[in-house]
Length: 313
Ligand code: C5P
Image 1 (cartoon, helix red, strand yellow):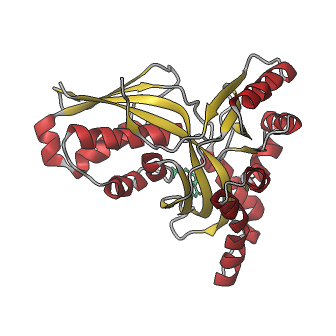
Image 2: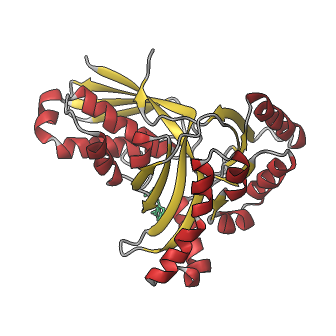
């Protein structure tokens, strides 16, 4: 039986700016996406019967069509019916470490790993950009999860340009268990509250784009102080007022002098950047001491240069 195990890293948003509406109903975005070492492990295997079978070590993860990893396998079966007929069905094992509803692209990264794994298992020989085009059909963050690293993402989030790698930095993640934020809710609420500020003319679009130059320049120079100051996420404007606990994490992190702190994606994870593992651990310990709530989960991890890749053991 053929089987491939892949590491599916999470991402954080160093920058998320909403430019305006798109004709497809999504938002036009400018984002800086960054892979981190916190990752799930995804194993794909051929199955003798002609169907998809998903299992997961986390009971809250759905194992049906609502799981993006399932839909990634369905997509490959539809795109390559003859190969599918030759190899049979697909079994997917998800070993979850990335929290859900967290703004860390856990589901998208799992789907990315399924695409990469099936490409290997079926000897398709697809290029990274072909895999990313398939990934874009599943979700806006899937193409980034395939290539990973540090990237500027525009359009829906699927147009990617690689940036200078920032993998020397450490990151502390904080999230309350059982506090997911719905991504569609966050974007819809943003449109309702700030729709009148959306760029419509090319001049307005250029003016919005200009705002992102400072962080891109800071990244190009590896200027960590500036990167910290230029962290930005428009979705904080709707999530923080609605979720007091996310606001609390944001306020607490700021007290411990990280390089910078920001909510990731649509939340509910808040992160803090640090130049050393020891400082990151100190920030994590200070957070734990200040918020003695067993529902608070904290991680120290590192920025990473890699997207989905084969597990070595
Ligand atoms: O593409 P994905 O399935 O991750 O998007 C989840 C939701 O986030 C979409 O249904 C949409 O409401 C919102 N979204 C958006 N504009 C984007 C990306 C996501 O409005 N560029």
